[in-house]
Length: 202
Image (tube, rainbow, N blue to C red; front, side):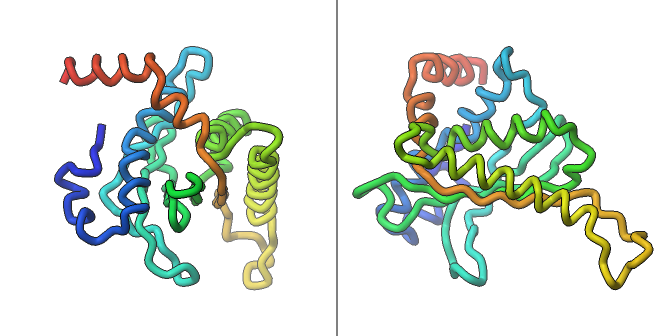
């Protein structure tokens, strides 16, 4: 389990705003919570996250943003990267986060395994309460990302009319919402017992 104030994140203490520090603290357990869900006997998913030390999640459009980053593994093969950051003033009035997922080689995966992971991730980063509409927006975003990945795989480029440049499938998914279920699972007794057991085993 990785801590914000562990050796890797120590330089951030003096460079981040208070709301950014709050985000980092509250998402200290994100990979463990999602991996716990994926490893459940009823899910038994081959997907896992591993947190990275890189905290730069900004783009040319957004400018520099600090967030948490994760390598995404299918079985033991790294297929992508997940980035999460809090919205401005995170924690003062709301706990809205933005996520960006990039996966490669998705055409080699079964539809079931891919969709199962995407919906499991969505459940942890948006509010599934029907009244908010966040989960409906997330499912729409997942469908759009899947369709684009499929279209790009079959699209015939004018630079390669014979179709020799085979695309193995790249998927990019953006989600935004309130991670209500993540907080519930992070703060539940079962996860606290899991953390204690891992600490003792270590």
